[in-house]
Amino acid sequence: MKKIGIFYSFKTNKTAKMGEKVIEAFGKENIEAFNAEDVNEDDFSKYDNIIIGVPTWFDGELPNHWDEFVPALEDMDLSGKKVAIFGLGDQKGYPENFNDGVGIFANLFERVGAKVVGFTSREGYTYEHSAAERGDQFCGLCLDQENQARLTSQRISDWVEQLKKEFN
Image (cartoon, rainbow, N blue to C red; front, side, top):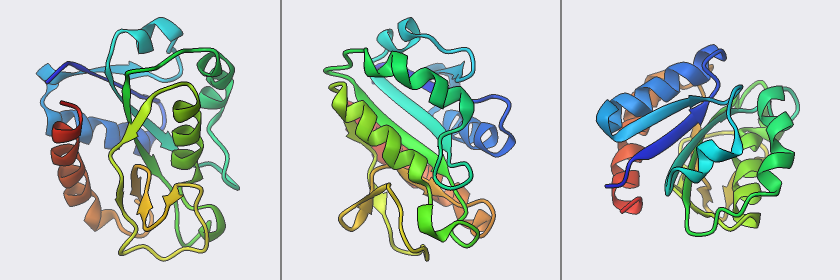
């Protein structure tokens, strides 16, 4: 498998912990971590396989560090690259925009030529709407540490095993 670049904020507590779990599941020798708050275009160009970690803030918004990078991302050509996205949301506290960040990024990466991989089942979640929905799946791994923390480790493990196949 080609080396993977994983991008998430090292300063957002829950997203950082989930990023570390993803790295551990892949094996540290197979993945290189980048702080989303310091990322630049060249960092993305180094990898054919990319993982993005993004929480959904407030009413379906991207965190400031990602929102500020979107214009640069929109100008990139990521044709031939595979991107998997994991996100954190709160399906009870924000049921009308659960994990919208995953969907926002999936749409953005597809517009710049990347192939989004790592789709997961919507089964087991209760919410009203999510921009991460694609038919009966999410276009990434949606985690809810507020209400379903006990399911997180298994969800990450299953997702990483799936990505190991899709990234080849």
